[in-house]
Amino acid sequence: MDTKEAIYHFQYSEKMKSGLIIGINLLEQLLGLKKEEEHYGGRKVLTWYLEALLRELRVAQNVVGLDHYADLERKLMEIIGRIQMSQFEEAQRSFSEAISLATTSCQASMSFLLAKKLL
Image 1 (cartoon, rainbow, N blue to C red):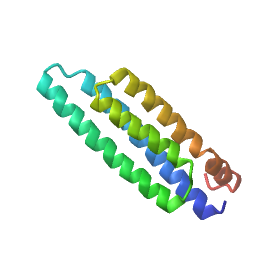
Image 2 (spheres, rainbow, N blue to C red):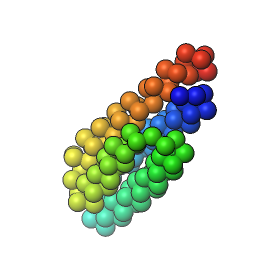
Image 3 (cartoon, rainbow, N blue to C red):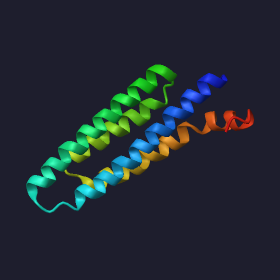
């Protein structure tokens, strides 16, 4: 791994982690909605947000070129499906798993950058 690759990898992993944290916070807000039409609209907006995050993940895969983003992509698609099916508790668990995947995925690049005293 070279410095440029490590920086890109670290940057995209942190971006995904941040996006997932925003997503789980949006899900918590969705669960607080009482009216059915608000709940339906909230599910749609959250799904759109997660689809945009999925597109960002695919950009990261193209830039960084690492296969381990494939697990995160599958987990993100799982979250979208669970939200569409109103399986909110399962979606929360999947969000936690996805955040762990994003955190783990940047460990090697973070260690590399720390060793180079760039972080």
